[in-house]
Amino acid sequence: MKLKKLLSGIAFNAGGPVRNADISSLTSNSGEVKKGSLFVAIDGANLDGHMFVRDALKRGAVAAVVDRRKKLSPGITNLVKVSDTRKALSVAAKNFYGSPSSAMKVVGITGTNGKTTISLLIESVFNASGVRSGLIGTIEYRTGKSVVPAVHTTPGAIELNALLKDMRKNGIKAAVMEVSSHALDQKRADDILFDAAIFTNLTREHLDYHKDLKRYFMAKARIFNNLKKGGFAVINADDRYAPRLKKMIKHKCLTYGLGKKAWVTCENVQTTLDGSSFVVKMRDGGTIPVNTNLVGEHNISNVLAAAACCYGLGMGAREIKRGIENLKSVPGRLEPVVSR
Image (cartoon, rainbow, N blue to C red; front, side, top):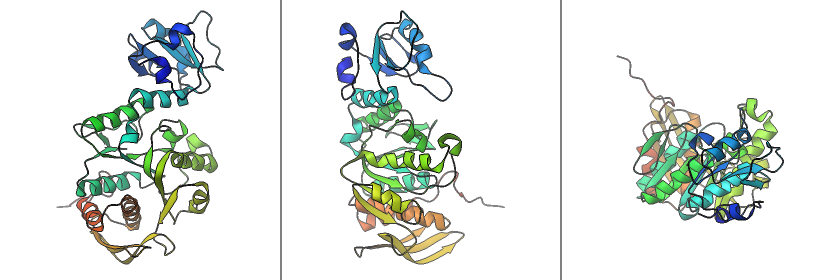
C-alpha cells in the first residue's frame, strides 16, 4: 500500500520518494520492523518511540512517522511528520486493514465494572440468534478460528484492526469488544466504528493513570464519538454520570437500570445463591422473562445492559432470553466452587 493511501485522512509532511513509497507492514515496535515497514513512533508511558527511529530505519523501515514537535538527532531522513502519532497510527491501521469495523456489526462496552460479563452475554445472544460473533476482551480474543489469551483488555490499534479483519475473513458477522478507558485515552480505538456503545458505570479506579474523575469520565465518553450513522448508545441510568453523558450524546440513547425511570428495567425480581429470575421490561411494552445463573444485583444490571443493546439491534425476545440463559458463568467472576 502506498504511504499516501495508508495515511489518507491525516495531514502529513513527507518528501517526494517517501510520500509514494510502498508499505508492506505497519508497526510501532522497532523490534518488529522488517524491510518495507512503516514505523510509527509513539510516546508511551515508559519509553518514547522517537528514541528508536534511527534503529527502525536501520532495520529496513521505509520511513518513520514522527511528531513534528519532537527534535530528533541530525542526519535522520525518511521522516513523515504529523501532529499526533497516536492518531496517525489509528488511521493507518484502519486503512491498512481495510476498515473492518465498517463492514460488520460491532458493539463496544466501556465502564469501570461489568464489561466482561456484558460482552459475554451479548456474544451469547448473537450466537443464539444464529449470528456468528467474535470477541475482544479481558479474558481472550476469539476470531472464529482461533482463541488467543488477552494481553490487554483492548489491544493496540494495529492488533485491533488485524483481529477484526481476521474475524471478517473467518465469516464472523458481529464483534463484541471491551473498550478500556486507557485504550480510549490513547486513541487505540479512535477509528473503530460501533453500531452500539455501552456505558456501565464509573467509580474511583484507574486514577493512577487518569489523575482525576473528570479525565476518567471524558476518556470513557470518547467511545460515543465512534457511533456509526444509525448507531445508538446504551447507558446505565443508575450511575450518577448518566445525565451528564446523555446530554453529550447526539445519537439515539437507550437507558437501563434497576430504577423505574430507565427505558429497560426489571420487575418480579427473585434472587438466590444459585442465580436470579426476573422480567426484563421495555418502555415500549416488550417483556422478557429471564432465569440466569449469574449471581447478584450487579449481574441483573449487566443482563439489562445486554438486553437493551440486543433489543436495540433488532434481536427478538426469544433469542435474547435464550442467549442470556445459555451463559452459565463468567470466568473469574463469582464462579461457584463446590465443596466436598
